[in-house]
Image: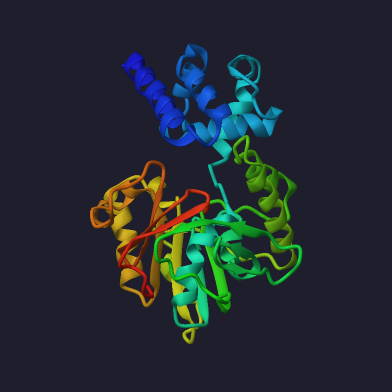
Length: 328
């Protein structure tokens, strides 16, 4: 049975190399393939709980502890010599990639809603995606200047009839919900966010630093809680005169069962909130089957269960579906 588990784990890392890292991070593609062939690293991983064996968590934890592993030899030495430290980090941390550039694919939807807005992000991490009105955007043939000169400007390649806004949305209330909120003022927490950024992605690292500087001036509120139990309480705090929006990106895949995800959806749909989801297509199969054929490695952006566009996982692209150019 253990050998069968090792085989499946090796295949998971090979899939990560092929489906996620290829064309994005040659370093992580190569390293993930080498991990899949390393008995020492696989045996270390198999002793962790299944949710803690994921590639991004291992690579981020190794980076946080000792800097980016240059090769499999370096990672194997860490597993041999610093296994307890690596294990403790992987048990204490989760992959809370808080990429503020994802706001570039959310903004067309937010700007088209009746203003003003009240935002709730579930799985908010440090809450950087709760600040879409504090950044600038460049969609190629349309641009929105940032409200402050030091704020980042997120580039996003757009295809299709996306309703690109001419003004930033007006947000009067915002809050996040997360099992383990990160603090934008904490050096330890922000180091973890930086460690989760892949090699070769210096633009993302630079944008993270700029977004953190913006957030520290007026930190977003992120509440510790479970999206399956605590969302209704948080929604009740939102001002009644604002359009309430509940949104999430790359979060519901970590809700382990389809029944639990359905419970979350029912909670949102039975409220007054507009629901914006930006997830891998497999998370909501009933939404994905109504979308065009999925390109590799994209998220599916939807409003109230209606598919709108394919998006790059880090907000780098927006592929709007024909016939979906109207407001949400």
